[in-house]
Image (cartoon, rainbow, N blue to C red; front, side):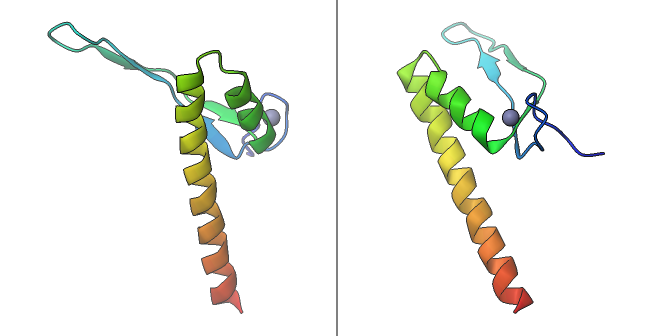
Length: 81
Ligand SMILES: [Zn+2]
């Protein structure tokens, strides 16, 4: 079964938010369920985040991941030739 974004396009990424307590002994941490995104929706999400610090953080993870995906497909293509 194909995994879909909420816009019903095929999902390319999943996003999990981890929220941790800070500054109190005995850290509590909870991760959200994974949410599926296509490329367009993930980019839109990161553009609309209200915290610019969070926006930069999500963008940097997204950019790195995209570079790795591109590297991987380049490697696969050169093996196929
Ligand atoms: Zn989408």
